[in-house]
Length: 298
Image 1: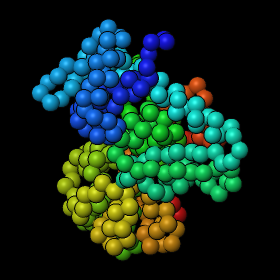
Image 2: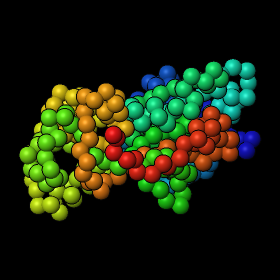
Image 3: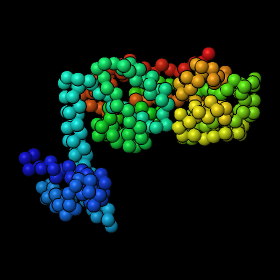
Image 4: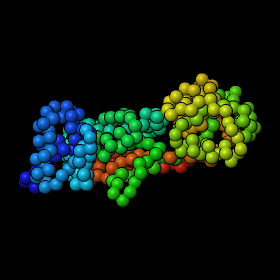
């Protein structure tokens, strides 16, 4: 493909991702007219129109979508090349891990346990929203994304969701709240701290509907770290896997009610199919298995 100028392709990719010529030009530090000229040159080379203009927004044509898919693969291959060469060279190997800011820190540490303290490994941790992290994974800026909600997958997707843990969900609270003989009495008398948007919430809503209960909600929280703090402050009973409150349970600040809620939360390590997988990630995944549902702590 000797006629292809990869600067043109790079400029096209930036405009396609933003949909706005002005912002893309500012980010690339070129004039808007120069950027527009580069896009027209690429369209001339390809013999196809890449964008339709709708107001101030540039919208990809069908050919534009195809071109962007190839551009992502081309530049992604370049990033992969650099990543592989860095790992094969002298010095530390790098594992770049993304996780939603709401994901349990204890789970993240347990996943990384096989390489924490390893002299030959550098761990880079990044938090953010799930769409941003998945995009970073797709562009090879991340090696793995840890999550409880794997991305939707179709026949064209290159994502692989490794189920690395399945944790049973329990009621946890201060010892003084564990004075009831049954689950129904506990949920009727004690306030609860609920996650806002997860499989846990779906399972809990189903449970109380079956029991005919309307529990008193002390707080609805989207951050597992805040659920820990609220439970420690005796705001109510936290509905989480034990791994979220491992330190508090170990130290006796919180205890676990002996009632089986029949709710399980799955944890996934989402990766991208790659010709040259990250060797450190392969090491971690080889030593991490779905251990099944955890038993209540003693």
